[in-house]
Image 1 (cartoon, helix red, strand yellow):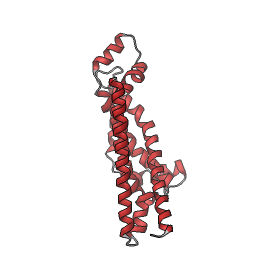
Image 2: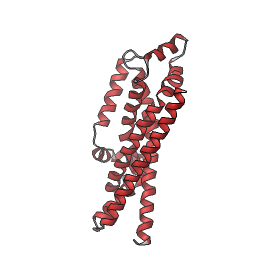
Image 3: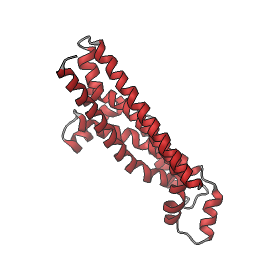
Image 4: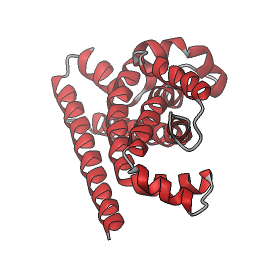
Length: 220
């Protein structure tokens, strides 16, 4: 394999990592508060509010049910407004973030709802405020489960980033289409698939390790 192709593979790996890391951070920053709000405003929770919960839940469900390819095309005007372009690696971060944020919100909600209600009741009986319960009880108790959920979100983003690359977003998807498929280079296609599989395995192993450490610390 020529040095030019090798350099291109490394460049594509870097672009994919950039897209996945940036969109994971942004999606978590958006999805975390949404997930917390969905939890605490649910029926029987500390800040029960049916109106807020229903509206926010409907928005999350609508976004989650939209296929990524359709979402990426539909928000092209928004992408252009934010980054000044609808193509390229940075532009792909916008739809990646918007597609992943609702998923993370539901992950957070599911993780928080698994917490024993007795723990929350005990905190309320000791005079803890809703914010104290959220930051000192709910999130720490569910952190190991949240890490596993975000690990799944990252793996999904790796797949979405490949689709984004096929639509002009750069990265490994773009490499596979332009240099593998269109030029009939099966070796490049195979290398791309192997790299994506390795990324998924690495992320899953790291997520499992961190979650186990957090769960062990909580039990101790």
